Image 1 (cartoon, one colour):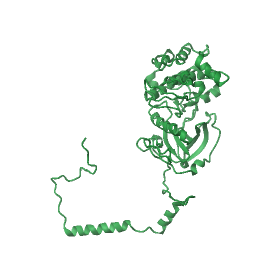
Image 2: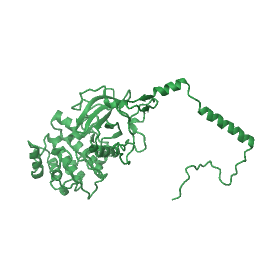
Image 3: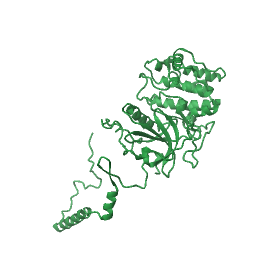
Image 4: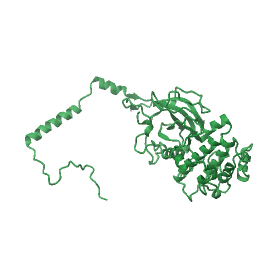
Length: 419
């Protein structure tokens, strides 16, 4: 391929255009001007400039000098110190999710912090990559940015004020059939998108299905997701939540995206009836039941729903609906206009909360939303933020050197366009 000279300009004179020879006096004059400009650029700073430079230097405990950049009128969305933190939205083995926003600015965001370790490196970078992909689907939780300090990795994500389906179950026990139908259909769309990209979620459950203020679902928490598993590919390794794991995972067999359809079936049964079809008193009894027993689906549920659940909870993955056949054609989903739904034009049957970014931001839909932390945090005084991109080999001194920002062009996605 012919290379283009990067210095080429359409204003360059072509070979046919001769440059006028310059006279000696003109060259002399130009030389004086250049020397004057050079002296101007080398002028020593006045006292106020020296003071500003001293103010921006800090001697750290090791005796090294750190030069801090001049303050900008814009807050840096890739620094924990730029955020005010309010409520705990969720906690777990992964870390903590906090309601936050850039200081004196809107909108609100969910900021997930994860304590870094060598064993977590792959899952953290993997989650960042999946969050990057998730922005192309309306039914997945959107990631806005990723950054890190020496000890923590952070994901800035959209704040979904409706809480999770688990929170809804705690309040209501189970959901009415209109909601079950609508949420199940949106879950199907989200899972089909992930699988089309070669991604298996591996932890589908009510807690990881969030609701926006309008009542649309977002599949969230990609910490256990795996990538590049397409049709015909399999992986091994137990991951997920035991009561939602497919039999082949618990048996240590190779598996594929069919495990997500099993988890989807358990989730739909749970939100429809309030019960897990494989509930047992001990973990080992639960595992044995999932591997050997037929699901105990309440007979008072809708007939089409019972049939759907039986198809999703087939022991053999190759016979499981979703992995085999078009789940959208099942009679349970007959009322759904998939074209309208996938354009997010369908009106949800239930609206749970307050729009994000409003003055009275609503966290009451979260079961942990009452815990207030207005002064966050040790994060704010920690080490400098690293903003390298994916694709680098992790340095031995910093395994997370390749943690990316989540925008392919170096700018943040539309949420932060006005910051």
